[in-house]
Image (cartoon, rainbow, N blue to C red; front, side):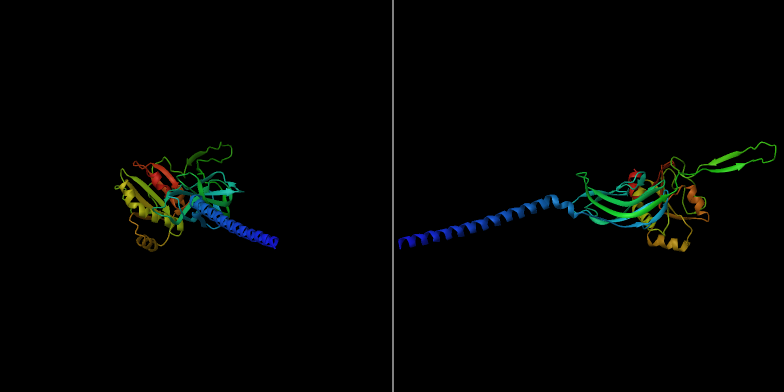
Length: 326
């Protein structure tokens, strides 16, 4: 009898011990999971912020696939969202076979600030002066504080640049004698056209524009060739309209030229609808000759002079204007 009671007591105490051990295990497990959850949450607050910025390539102009002339710009439209980052520059660049394509020329980047535009849409570009193929576009966002790339977007494409954009010399042959028994004599005149950098700004001959040259005396001149039929051109002129007051304070006079012949009423209406306050003109009948003479390789095409009207910058993007105008 005593033995039976002894055994029952041992079994009872064993059950209590197992119950206590079970509860202890469960309690420890709960505490462990709670600590892990808290640690993970803390790390997300500290290091997980990189996942909250957004960058996406929306479209290109022209669309892929396409063949472009050397010197012609490929425009990249993209959406961005800065997330936790206070300020970032954003660049669009070409890639071929998984690597950066050599020899490109591209846009710079203004700094996108969270306090001004935490998210929105923007545009970049790049181009080549010689035959090149590009099969991918990469766009990257860089934190100005840490100098680290924090967001990247890739887009497959098929673009090919053909020809060369280096200015070609034109030659005129005079006094050529082809009479038998006479020595052939050739007089060659070479007219170098294309780049205006370091040269005096051309006059507006062949361009229908009301531009007061006297009012631009001792002032810098900014000329923009554009085409309202192209979205990048419209964007450029609208941006110039926004900066018109600021540029005027810096002593810069703006003159814009519609680079192809269109209905004047249509151009005037667009100018009025977009509140364009500076001079807007249009090329005459010889548009190709005028564009070649001014060295216009793509549209929009910006040309900036110094106060003596010597060209000091050309072919840059409107997003680079603040830097060029310093």
